[in-house]
Structure formats: structure tokens, C-alpha cells
Image 1: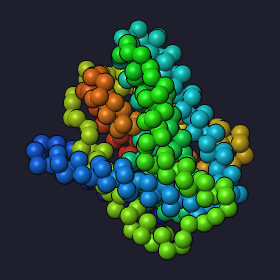
Image 2: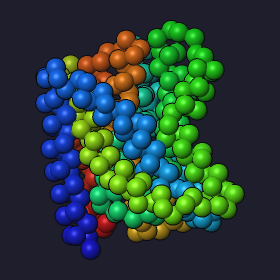
Image 3: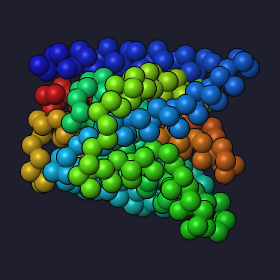
Image 4: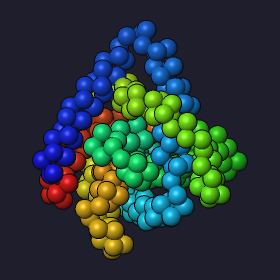
Length: 314
């Protein structure tokens, strides 16, 4: 079972690399911009909400309550990385903007565009996707609130609570999650006829997400950002999985269960591509953010995750 799962993951990683590479290559073609604009809108407004809704809406209340520990694990992993990165930035005596880059990329991982496809390919069960979707939404909401507020503050601008709340409530996947949880909480089920079309929407979305990961990553020389890259990598890809593993044992989840393995995969994800988007919009060092996201994505996919699967006996 270990070899089968590892083999599946390695095949998934190879396919992921190919799709990411296509996305990176597409940056040099002018015609790709409108194409990827459409792909981004499709994923953001249609396919990702379909994944979230189909993973949550048909679950029972007991099943969702069973994911409460997933929420706790997401908060713990985020919190440890966030405050540890802030402390490390102070010790490094770097500028506020570089410190913000280290903190953002240490605390917020690529659970949506990379985490969900990897979990789907390796596990492919409703249980795994429900846990992954819940984890991704918690990190996503934190990213849209605390993350945006932190980046705004790092630029010296005032933080607008109204704008941040509006951003969360108008984020399609977060809104759909609320609707799905209402179905669960009220004990109702959406029409069963919706399952098949939603699955048809969900399956190609993962490939499109990986294309977007590559397309949004600028290729730069990492030597200029060695210290920021190293500190972020240690916190994001070493400390976060270790802390998460310790909490899984502490919470009594059992390290071999599907939910535990799913959470470990999500905890070992590289920095979020959304950080590059924020850097672009807030006029931050786009090359710094791009370097951290790009190179740690490869380290996560081809070193950290395979080692973790072997060591933990996935």
C-alpha cells in the first residue's frame, strides 16, 4: 500500500510539474494572457466552488463535526508559522517589506491551487476532499483577512476592516462553503442530480489550477534572496509539518487515517500563489515573492512530500 501510494504521488508530481512548466512557459507568449485570464475566472467562479460544494454539501452533520479537529489543525499550523516568521524577521533585521514576505509565505500555503489537486490525485475520496476543502477554506479566509491586513500594514497604509470583510464574503469558494454548511446544518441535502455535473466541473479544474500556478510564477535567480528563501523554507516545509504531526498525535486522530494524512499533505504545501498576486497589487517586491513561491514549490513537491510519505508510511 505504501509503494502504491508513493508511486501514485510521484506520477501526480510528474504531471503537476509538466502542467506548472507549461504555465511558466506560457508567460512568454502574449496570446496566453487572455487565455489564462479566462481560465482564472473559470476556476475562481465555477470550478473551485463546485469542488467545495460537492465535497461538503452531501456530508452529514456528524461528518462535518468530525472535521472540527481539521479546523483546529489549520489554525495551529498557521498560528505557529505566522508568529515564528515575525520573530525570525525581527532577528534578521530586515526591512518591513521583506519581513512581510517571509511571514506571508511562511504562514499561508498553497492549499487551493496545489493542495486540492494533490489530495484528489493521491487519495481521491470524499472523506479526503472534505477534509482538504475545510482546511483550504480556513487558510483561505485567514489569508483574505489577516493576510491582506498584514500586507496592507507593511506598506504603511491603513487597514480597512470593511474592505477585508467584503473581500471574504465575495470570495466565491468561501460563499459557497457557507451555503454548503447551511445544507448540512439544516439537515437537508441538495438534489442528487447535481452530483454528476459538479464532478464533471471539478475534475478538469485541478489541471487548470496547476497551469495557473506556473503562469503566475516569475522566473528569477534565487541567490539574491537566499536568507529569506531559507528561513521561509524551514518554517513552511519543516516546522509546519512537524507541529501538525505532533498535534495529530495530541488530538488522538491516528496518524494513518485518511483525514490525518490529508492534513499532513496540506501542511507541507509550499507558499501560496495568492501571495504573488498580493505582491503585484500592493507594489511589493514581485521577484522576491515569485522566487520564494517558485523554488519552494519544487522543494515541496519533489523532496518534502515524498520523504514525508515514506517516513510516515503513507
